[in-house]
Image (cartoon, rainbow, N blue to C red; front, side):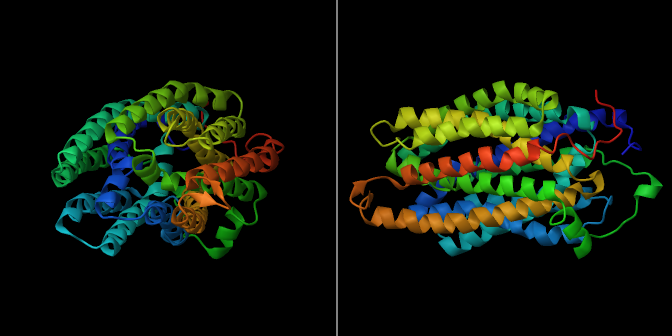
Length: 432
C-alpha cells in the first residue's frame, strides 16, 4: 500500500507500544497461577480448570463470523474501543463476583463473554496497529513492543504475586481479588485513552472499496491458497501442542506445591529472558525468514517439553523452572512468526480476515483437544496418578505428546513453506 505516509504515524506507533503493555498487564491477571487462584477459590477440579482455561481459545471461533461483518479497508477504531471496554469491564467482574458466591457456571459464562469480545477485536486491532508500520521493520517493531510489555510485566507480576501470596496465607483472598479488580479498572482507563489517540490510516480513494467479506472471498483467502492453508495448519498444531499448558496453573499450585510468590519470581525470570531474545529474534527474522525463526524456536520449546516429562514434586522447582524459562523465551519468536507469516501471504486489505480465520481455526482445535485431554487428566487422577500400573502425573504424559506434535510440525509441515521462498505479496513500502 503505497498510499500511506508512515512518517505521520510515528507518535501512534509509540502509543501502540504503551497500549500493548497496559493490555498485557491486565491479561497477566488471568494467566496460569492467577486464574488458578480464582478457580481454586471456587473449588474447580484440575480437569475443569483446563477446560475453562481453553475457553479463551474457543472464543477465537467467533472470528469466523466476525470477519464477515468487517468491510475491507474500513475504519475499525470505534469497534475495537467499544469491544475493548466490554472485555475489561467483564474482567473486573471476574474478580469482584467470586467472593460474593457466584456459581462456577456463571463464572464460565462471564469468562466466555470477556474473551469473546477480545476475539472479535484482536485481529482488527492487530491489523490496525501493524498497518502504521513499514513491512520491512515489522520484526523489530513487534520485538520492541514485546520488550516494553515484558519489562513492565516483570515488576507488575512480582507485586501481584507477592500480594496474592500474602493475602492467601492470611486467609483473606477476597481482599486481594478486590484490589486486582481496582487495578484492572485503572489500567482499562489508561488503555482507553491510548486507543483513542492512536491514529488509523487513511486509505486512497481507490482503496476505499467498502466490500464485505463474501464466502467466495473467504475461500480465496483460505482454502484456495496453499501457503495460507499451510500456515493455518502449522499454527493449529502449535496450539494443540500447547494444550499441555491449559492444566499448568492447577498442576504447579496443587501438585508441585509452588507458592504464588515463587511463580511470580519465575515469571520475572521468564519475562527477562524473553525480553533479552525478542530483539535478536526479530532481527533474525528480518535477516532470514519468519519460517526459519519459527522452526528454530519450536525446537527450543520441544526441548523444554522433553524436560517437563521428568518434572515431579520432588524436582518440580528446578525442572519446571527450566521448562518455563525455555518455553517463554521461545514464545515471543513463535507468536510473532506465526502472525507475520500470515501477513506475508495475504494482501494487506485481507489481513484482518486472514488473522481472524486463522485464530478461529486454532482456537477450535485448542478447545476440542483440551476437552479430550481433560478426560485423560481426570482418568489418571482418579487412579491415583497411575496409568497401566505406572506412576505418572498427567502433565508428564501431556508433555510427551506435545514433543511429538512439535517434531511433526518442525520436520514435516514447516519445511513446506521454506520451499516456497519469500513472500509473494511484497509491497512497495520502504524497507528501513
